[in-house]
Amino acid sequence: MAATPPAAAAAAAAAAAGGAHSVFVYGSLMADEVVSAILKRIPVSSPALLANHHRFNVKDRIYPAILPVESKKVAGKVIMGISDAELIVLDAFEDFEYVRRRVQISLTDTSETMHADTYVWSDAEDPDLYGEWDFEEWKRVHMKDFLTMTLGFMDGLERPEPKTQVETYQSFMHEHEQPESGTQVKS
Image (tube, rainbow, N blue to C red):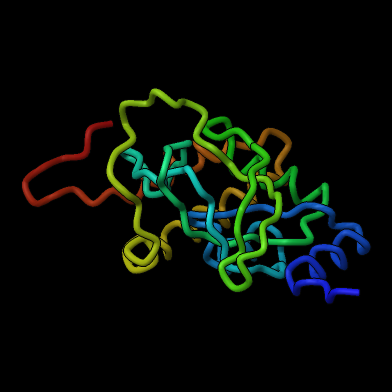
């Protein structure tokens, strides 16, 4: 009998432990600090590629969007062992701007393929999508503030009438705008 590839074995073990979902992440959720703030743990993960998709910048946002684009690839990672409850939290975090889709990914360590959920931008015709989003630049420039916003979002989920992730993001970014010298921030 052939040996089970490591990622498949990890996914099977996670499913047996009650976490049957694998999620391909490609933006802020590639940062363990952000995942930990949302899920209160860091799941088993593996580097992965999603074929025939492109990762875009989104105007006035510091997080990316993906859409199907022939002959392009998105590098990310797959987080495994995600419980049903954790998937609901991820759905809330991704909010209405994204739709969860089932995709086939390739693990970069083994070339093994597997199915995973991922979050695809809900508006395929959005004129605010451009270029290519850069994870390393995001970590250097935006991760600290994004993590603070994410912690605020998670605290807000505990409230009777929580804000959506987009509302939390917009109010956080508005509060932290730095006016350039000689200009004022419009309300």
